[in-house]
Image 1 (cartoon, one colour):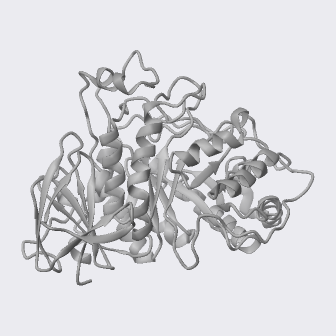
Image 2: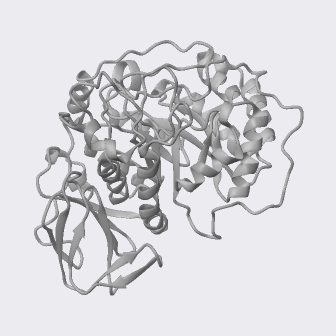
Amino acid sequence: MKNAQRKFKTRAAVCLWLAAVMIFSLAACAGGTTVPTETSGKPDVTEDTAPTEETDVPETAAPETDAPEPDEEDGMNPYYVTYYYGISAEECTFERYKEAAEAGFNLMSIDKGSVEQRQEALRWCEELGVRATVTDNRIVNLLYNEWETRLDHPEVLDEVVRMVCDDYRGYPALYGYDLIDEPGADKFPLLAALVELFRKYDPDRICLINLFPNYADPESQLKTKDYEEYIEQYLETVKPDLLSYDHYHLRWTKARDDRYDVTDPALVDIYVAGRTNADRLGFYLNLEDVRYYCLEHDVPYMLIVLLNEHYNYRYLTREEISYEVWQTLAYGCTALSYFTYWTPGGGVFTNCMISEAGEKTVHYYDVQAINAAVRPIGERIAQTRSEAVFHVGDEDEREYVTFFPAKGYGAVRAVSGGEYTVGFFEDGSFIIANKDYEEPSRCTVTADAPLEIFDIETKTFVPVTENTFNLPAGGGVYLRVADR
């Protein structure tokens, strides 16, 4: 199996080719802020003010409490659904966090406002029964302002991390600390030192670091010879609790000149009419690389999927968003994130879940429906481990993926009817994800034993009367062999 999934010896050249099709516009960080680039399109999450080591220090630390941690059953690994770029500081209210929870998010990103505002948001998250990650400007400052010299002053790192942990660790809803987005490998030693300190002062929480996709430029962004080295260095140097990365490949050839936030579902077809799709290659190659190395290092992994429209990244239909999410499930991702929840200012981003003015767009309801359908499945997948991933039908990235074996896999002899990603898990369950996000598919599974289908209402597997399944466009089905 390892040899079958590692037939990628030409990947370095492919990644360089992928990078060549991008227009990179890196800008130097000033005052701890970042600027959007065509590589990720990500805005700065910590507002436009320059963070300093004195910024956001509250008068009192968080109160210690014995309250139970929300949204987590004893002994069970959670499946978290979160987002990048959260609720604005001006709209930081209980109602806004409740709104996000009602969309199916169980891990909030608290990335704006003062420490006091973040602490208040953590209290709201506890009340809502969800968890949260916190981005703190003092950590952002360490990682952007004069970061090259930080390791020369370990006492400063220790003091800052201790202060940050003192401010937040008493809040039961806190799941972890969001440190940085898309670092180059040259920052991995500093990140490793910070992660070690967070484990010293708050060992029950994770550190979240999001990595570049495989179309980032090796020289100016990854700071390694290729993407594989970038991933492996990160895992070996930083030793993360979770590997997070983003990959956006659903584009159109020319961005609309009259982009606007679509808030009426009846306007979606009109808005996307006449577009020409231009999907970037490398999506499955990225999934293959991340899955392989994370399984090797026994580290869970999460993909941030595209949601909003920016640059040449197109407006996504519900089926296209669903397609992205089901692919992450088939590949064994045990967490999910969307880019973005709130709309960043500046006029670059449209059709996030919540507009810059605070209004729900169609994508709010799209994500709400998708989360309701996949979270119960994700909760089951989080308790097991990805065993194998195969593709069925035509695939443009066929050089980098493994196709379903002619002799079958386990008790499953064949999967037919369309183009699918089929992900098997160690507990005997498997996902069939429809790669066609425009048309539904009628999928037939040939098996040596009876099959069961997962019922999201009862959260149990139930027998099926026939082994043919109607897969929605961009959707999927979760099955298992009955005797397992």
